[in-house]
Length: 335
Image (cartoon, rainbow, N blue to C red):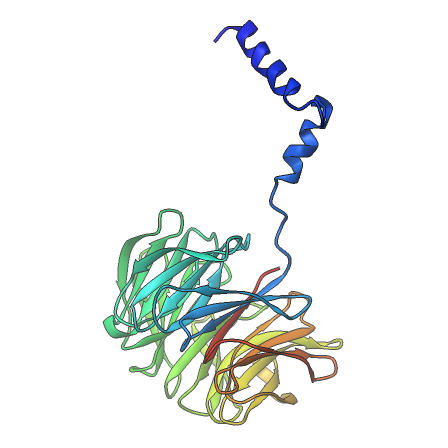
């Protein structure tokens, strides 16, 4: 096309916008831009096969996403908050959710009873633990395809990465252990005995690996510097998940959902001085837990009372209760 022809098209576009004027064209395009998402709380509802989306400031449900699979169990959110990955135990599939559209856009079969999903530190891969296949599937988060699988222990149920990304930690309920995997070679370099039915794993602010033995009454701490268990502590029956937050100026503390006691137990986060610093009564069957970035609020899902409760860590009080789907077992929060 000639320069004269291009100029004619631009002039015609301007004449067609006489009411707004050519000077207003940037404003018109600006109005079409998508506003950035505010803080959101995502809750996996295992028995409803869905994800509840909650406004992180008003504490109100703003949408429910059909996972298009069955037994939605675990969640992992990308750093930019645009994609949410959800495992589905009964389907053995990983759902990919567009958080702006609040819609499932892809579904990938990863293995028998895919249980947990964790994103690598660069968000390029999603690692999925498949309980029924005793392995981990590695999914490319840009093309939604499996890159390969890694043998794990017996019944892998928990998964997290070290702070530097060099190691993956996988809890195995059948072996009562946590396996340490080199993320470069994909080889198991160590197996650490931890206790009965180890389940959830999480990275603490100081780089330690914390885990729960949901078949017992205790939590444990692993130091990646030595790949040794450096602490264990009794918190009560059926400890489920852990988040880190503050009580005023005190902390960070490890807040543990204790399903058999309907409490959240706060434990000092120093493995050399593990002790209870707070106990908070919550709903029935507390399971999933997450903290806001400031560490002043906890978001707790309850698989029996079917709600999310917001806890103020300063006062140790529940300040909001939000009904969600059936059996909410996992919570993640965007920034």
